[in-house]
Length: 453
Image 1 (cartoon, rainbow, N blue to C red):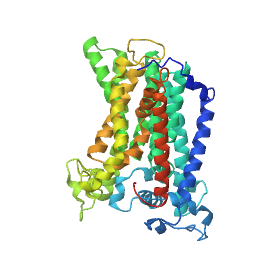
Image 2: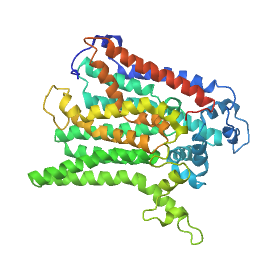
Image 3: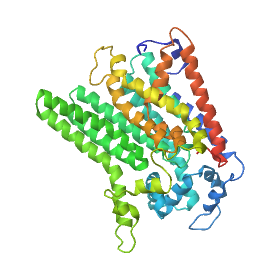
Image 4: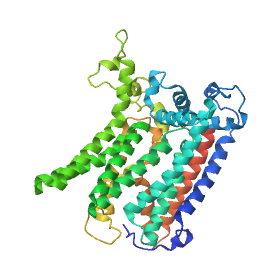
């Protein structure tokens, strides 16, 4: 791997002197193009489910035709999302989704502030919220990249800028603009990882109070990410890793007040992340399992979980359940992203011995890029394995958007060849062009209510 301290000549082609402005301009230009691709699709598509959503203001009955474009983004699972956000969890199968709970909080907040509206307004809120969350997640990924790679040289600035730019044109495409949880999850996961890596830097610098605050805040954000999407629980691995490291240091070097305090904060943080999964299960148990006349089958399980029951019973999610001949095209569709996720995870797992820190220190330190990459690689690798074996595999194209390592891998791999050849640069350009083409085609299909979803 080439040192990130080199200054590739391609850096002169980018406005690295003001990366936030450049990322902002690129983001809104891309969003405008994708918006046109979705809204310009004629009709309601082959599925008429969206027509079940009201085109009228629920309180006044007046027509709101200028806003009907927002229903172009109400496709596939977002039909469920908007219903839940408006009416709560009415049907048992809706408990598979956590994002509508967060969307409902925003809608309730708007109504408390005096805004009123029907279902079409829920769609509009979802679209606006997704756009804002996606933009902020681009900035969060940029700041996270600075924590990992530094920002002192042109090459370091370039890798941070290009990684954030790739997130703009993520294969998630229209799902990052529609009332889906992907954009909010990306924002929460990147922000949580930014705070976590910042805590490692403060730990290395001996700033313990700020470190503890950042760790606990990151845990709260990871818990919220877990509510939005259950795979957010995977980010809790960073606390498992740190707890094992501190426990091992205590066993080999002896206990100390510093280690005890550090371990206590880490364990508490892990428990906070777990609450993102546990609390919704408790709410569901109180809803369905307190009746003496009729109990749902999952209520009598040793560890009752409505999420596991709904995913398996209604959505056919489970180990190798999706491995059927009819789903082979979907596996082929997901293969490029799965391959990149696996390759980048292995690359990051090897990083402690191959990647130099921004200061040029050859020995792995607690805050070396390789040390932090190692921690972040495992959640992404687990996601790839779970998507391949247990999920509806095609959704990996969109849920991968919330994981940073594969963006860094694509950029870093290209930078290896910036100095001597143009192959690396062409490879990155080809990858970006493929992502753009896929997102635009997907946007047209999405707006027409056609698969893949």
